[in-house]
Amino acid sequence: MKKTLTILASALLLAGAATSCASLDKMAEMAEKVKVTCNPEILEAVGGNVDAVVTVTYPADYFNPKAILEVTPVIVYDGGEASAKKLIYQGEKVKDNYRVVSSDGQTVNANIHFEYAEGMEKCHLELRGVAKGKGKSVKLPVKKVADGCNTTYMLAKGDGAVNYKSDQYQSVVTTKVEGQIKYEVGKSDVRKSELSSQSIKDFKAMLEEAAKDERQKISGTEIVSYASPEGSEDLNNKLSADRSASAGKAWEEITSGTSVSDPTLKSVGEDWEGFQKLVAESDIQDKDLILRVLSMYSDPAVRESEIRNMSEVFTSLKGEVLPELRRARLIANIEYQNYTEEELMKLIDENVDVLDEEALLKAASIATDNKKKETLYKKAVTKYDSERAAYNLSALYVDEGKLSQAEKALSKLDQKDPEVLNALGVLALRKGENEKAAGYFDKAGNKENLGTVNILEGRYDEALKQLDGTGTFNEALACVLTDNLDKASSILNKIDTPEGNYLKAIIAARQGKESAMKKALKAACEDDALKARAKNDIEFADYDL
Image 1 (tube, helix red, strand yellow):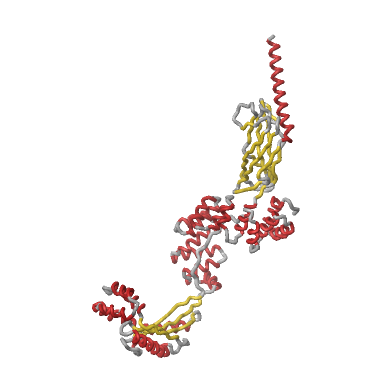
Image 2: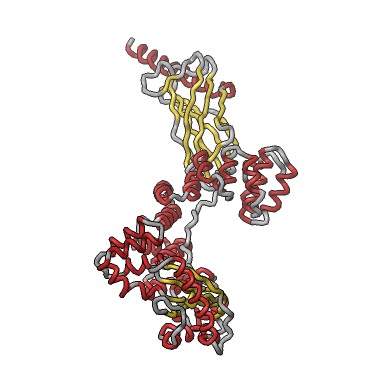
């Protein structure tokens, strides 16, 4: 009897197993009735990730109440495949903690995530399922879900732009040289002693030096005469005009032997401006009181009267200030022709020590050899303690990809300087630290570089706001990524580069303009990298290239 029960139990167990296996086989057989969709229909890489929502509709009588279904989303691409996290479902009678699917039929949604890998632009997404029950498992037919992966955002010029501080080098340097003729109170005749004064001697020497130097040119001359603010205004105006005339006659004697042009004559009259300046610079005890009087009254006569009332003060003015205002200024404007770019390049190799800070910065900016640039910046730092050169040296390291040297150089600079902050952002961006870079760009107020980060991170609307009006390739790309195709086209009309033509081809493809697409793509494919990209780009999948 016992033996009979054992045989019966074994038979029932085998029958149950057979039934379970048959139920799992049924799920495999009915797999074609399972409907699967994907959003987006074409996968898209965003910020280095590929995310999608897969929707699966299981028909009635499909899902075995005692079965567990494991679904693995897989991207298959040139060079390999990548699996996302398994999706696990269970029938109504399974006592576990997976999502339950009714045998009456049910639609389920699942978020799937992959990290982008090179080659995924030409790929397909498939679902691989395994049904399990009571120690048995049956592989389900593979379900293909989507074809291709859009990687258009990766066209972004993503290195960021580091700026260089400008030099103040002038191709023509204009200087003003002058001498002075002093007059006695109430007089306008030029004393002989004034013609031999040190001021006039120095003025004449500078004119002679300019005449001999082929780099210097006297571009204009003038005589400006004044009277000290004492006495009546009418008298002082006449006195100033007479001094202008007498200084004009003395000019001929002073400039004899030179080819200096005749000066223009200007009479100022009472020199209240000079008076205020000399008082402010003096050691007169009550100078603040005098300056307040000057600010209170606009009428010259009232000014003078008020100052005369301060008899003690006026005595000091009479001896220290007023004599300096009875004068005529002899002025020559001299233009100095600075080194040309060709001369600077020659001096770099032959006599670099003659270059001042601005000339060194200028020479570095036009040098084509980075080693020379580095040498010139270092010399400006050593010789002139140039902060601009120190910054430009760090920017050069960033551009050369010498990131550790750039980081060390930038650490020594003013961390509140927007240019330094921007350079630190570019440094972080090139190290792949996008969010850190965004922080620096935000502090620096560099919207263009911040816009670039937002493209790379998939924040396309924000990127477009920051890039708006820059007219750059990245602005056009942000327009494409936000479906502003007309605006993108308008920007690209002014960008004649292989990348620009490639983006034009993408726009034309999206608009169904095949001939325009092929024309733009042909121009773009002069670049070998873009030519190779186009072969696998899902943007052109509907066209025969």
